[in-house]
Amino acid sequence: MQSLTSRAKQVDRSPMTVVERLYLWNIFKGMWITLKHFFRKKPTIHYPEEKRPFSPVFRGLHILNRDEEGRERCTACGLCAVACPAEAITMEAAERVSGEENKYREEKYAARYEINMLRCIFCGLCEEACPKDAIYLSETFAPANYQRKGFIYGKDDLLIPHPKENPEEYQKAVGSRAKAPANA
Amino acid sequence: MARPVQYNIYGQTDVKLVKEGPEGYAGEGFFTTSLDKVVGLARKNSIWPLPFATSCCGIEFMATMASHYDLSRFGSERVGFSPRQCDLMMVMGTIAKKMAPVVRQVYLQMAEPRRVMAVGACASSGGIFDTYSVLQGIDQVIPVDVYVPGCPPRPEAIIDGFMRVQELVHNESLRRRTSDKYKDLMNAYGIQ
Amino acid sequence: MLTNESIQQKLTEKFGDQVTGFTESFGMMSFEAPKDLNLKVLQFLYDDEELQFRFLSDLQAVHYPDQIGRELAVVYHLHNLVSNVRLRFKVFTNIQTPDVFSATALFSSANWMERETYDFFGVNFVGHPNLKRILNVDEMDYFPMRKEFPLEDQTRIDKDDEMFGRGGTF
Image 1 (spheres, rainbow over the protein chains, first blue to last red):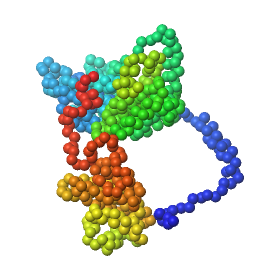
Image 2: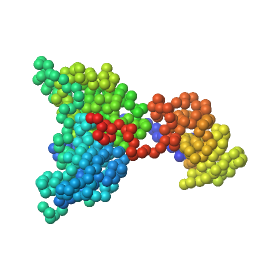
Image 3: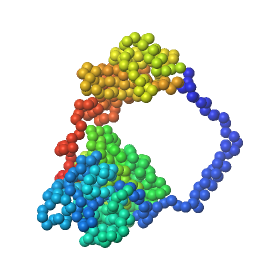
Image 4: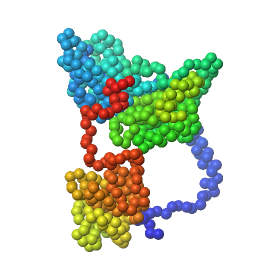
């Protein structure tokens, strides 16, 4: 039969030599490599006890940001929900009434802000779409859970702690990104 | 890179965790209460996973099995590819509607006590694939015990989900699988 | 030496003005023929001593809803493995009677690819031994890749709320 291409090669089918046929030498060679690995550094990270640092660009659970005075930045414009390819974000807007100026930065705010973490693919498009720097993806990965209802993250799970009322937890959330303590 | 915040400290804590676990816990018999604990301990530390990997979450599972994260530290050294020998089915990746009967068949072939873990957005809810061909979450065909979010989830997240499964196995009553509630759950999925 | 020009010359020698639409993009030639002629053209490309297009690397369809009377294009990607030349061959058909002769007798690999094309575009391959759905569920009663479905509307409300976390029932 004519070969299909012009680049066909003959397979080498020469019989094995005596050493090759003995097998034992090759087994020792393999065992020697195994033995060497006993004395190597162990690469295993014992996860729940020791944690591997994540990259600063890691995209994990979302966080809703506040400004320096602790007012929520989100104005419920809905751009994140539109940008979301998985349609995981739902929000309900409400208007700020007088007396709430220290709670919300803009005149409109998100009364309900929910992300379905099972739908979310952590792509970061919401972060890119946000004009108010209100939503960020953090370096915390989303934990597993037993039931579907545990994955609807509401505002109380997503909001960053208040920087004035709860400065310790706020520092924890900001982590190594904290600037020099100017406002603390 | 220029993110001003680093962690979500509320999302990680147990505030969100639904405590009760999957449906189907029943009352204890007086006879086997302590035996439960021993059996639970033994089962917990010898879970054999069955990887049902169809896409990228499966690659992340391979990273979890490999030496850096090493899932065998949790007693699952042996990854079984026969459903009859395995305790935990890990569904990783998009399940197309054509694949759904296969998932169900594999689940039915597993012996009790069997568990299912949905890894990744696609397996647990369909993820971004809200299309004509993709099953919107495998819990439409089989009962799921633990969901792991992420696209794909990091090995840490898979281990986190695995430890939740272990917790579930540890606290399971020996009579759960024969209880009426469990039978009702199975009937809800049309499984006898 | 097999070049796109020599292939074109050979084809027009054999089929005259039946083969049309010779274009070249990224070095790969593309042409079309009437749909009754598709097997004859494929057979000629297969048998000819010099052409030797004996490998069907891909077969699929394209839906052009604006071209009335020739909405569906069935595209054959052929490969000459000896001199490493690729070729694209199209036949157009209307969408009311999308009957095209099956290439399974010539290329065994066309079997599944034609089933896939039938599955997504509804092209009816005449003479195919087992023309049924391959990738989609058997109960499906439409051809999903035809451009007759609107793009998704963000305000759609027929979605399962429980799956999307929009309040819902739980």
